[in-house]
Length: 346
Image 1: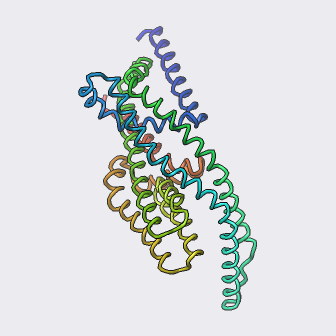
Image 2 (image 1 turned 90 degrees about the horizontal axis):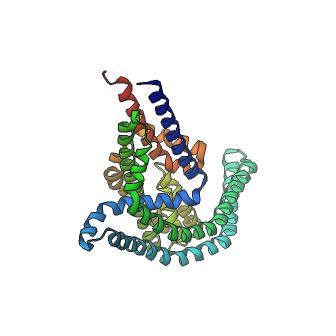
């Protein structure tokens, strides 16, 4: 290869790397765009296999895209509009319920403190309890403060997701060709393979986790409604969201419901029923949903999964715990490609 060709290839590689870096940076710094874009990408993965079928029925690709867009919009908006009024009402009730719950927790703490002091002559310092309560109050206040903006963002996503989905279905082939056109020749084949694998694995993982969270959240929401637990919509949504986090997510989702039921009814049948509900929902998840949908897609050792979640939490908090698994799967895929390149026989 001549020096001119080498220099041209270097410039192409630098340009290619710059474009990818700017795109990743933009997605990281602009969550109002990256979140609905990610949601529309998941919908695109669901719609893409159906597009050829409906194109043959309508004899027009654009008409098929519009039809699928309408179907996805209706399916998404029906539960949204049904749950939003209940969710808004429960958020308002939570603001009045929290001070009462705080008082009950304080009285229970002092009962336990007195019991331990009388039986074991050990004094539990108030500072630890007060520090824990301050952190819980701060977290709760922050959560309630952000919920209205989350609801507003949901309405914004209801407009942006169908818009992004339309152009993804319409121009996905053009986007792929454009990206491959600027890919340097030296890495073209491997980049195309990695792009295809990432698109398949990460897309399937996101979709599978969405289905998994929906199943668990749906079971718990319906169960809490039947058991007559207050804030059943809010707790059901929380269970679905926290379930996205491997291993500790189900525990995080169950704690608020168990606390509420305990201080409302004590350690009675209601507490046992709610505890059994969460156990059944997560047994279904662990025994059926996770092995069938998640483990085969990710193909990561459990130790790698745990370490990924810990590192994600360490650097990016709760969001890092959610995205840590697909990122780990992507890193593994890229590392294997480099390994094949380095150690492949000449």
